[in-house]
Length: 248
Image (cartoon, rainbow, N blue to C red; front, top):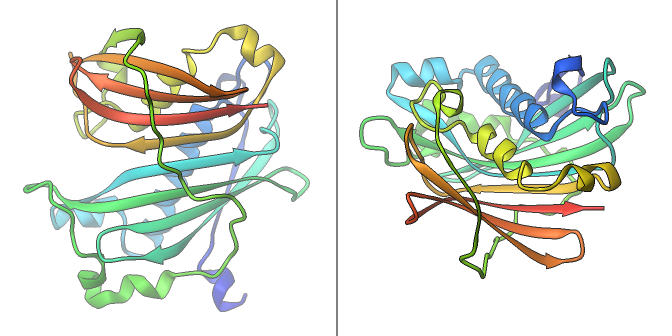
């Protein structure tokens, strides 16, 4: 195994029946969950995982996610996710993923941006100071041929839908789970859309946290054929996250 290969984490999955949609394809929410889990496995194996960080009062926070797919795994199909660290800056790190089908073909990629925060102050930590700067040893040259997450702009204030954050939205950190936003956003499109098209690219940009009982309002803007920009606000004031969905 080459030095670069050893920096890549490889994890195997099956598209379970309860993880697929009515088309029999893995849902974007489940794929997102798997990506975040792989990031966790990969960092834990290398001494930068949540559990060891929590002991020191730090945690990883997902800032941006972009996923681009040629196809989604089908029900019962085996698939693999690979992940590696592309860059480490003082306050954030770029982590990439490849999604590989049962035949070993790369069917999609993802890019993510993470920060590490101090749980007490909620301020970002200096990644280059961590473990004496050892985190930079995991930077890997593996290519990721999709565009980085873009700046998402929403030019309307017209609310498409609202909901109140409930029990199933809340994660171990006490706020709305980052994947639940993905599911709620994709629920804004009618079933007919998913019968006729598939999601080619999906982006999330997380701005702030929301909590149990917050009212979330969803704003959806069509910016081009098949392309939508979305914004989620809490209690009609603060932007919680933004998203871009491109159907084809």
